[in-house]
Image (cartoon, rainbow, N blue to C red):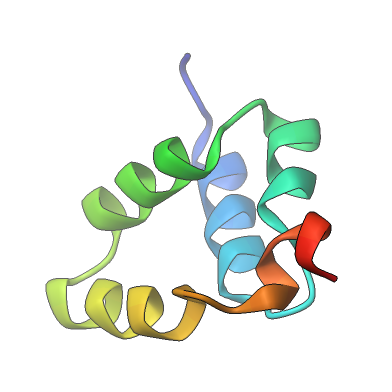
Length: 67
């Protein structure tokens, strides 16, 4: 799937926000959680990616089922 720069930017912004679950990204852009992780790994600096992963790992607000 080919994403535009504006779509990639929007996905990254959504992934950083605490209240937007991965399911919302899946619904809007068709990307699963693992695909979002790959996208973030590719488009962020290594330190930013690690910071993001630590932030969202285990965070119940990023998963609609855990809310």
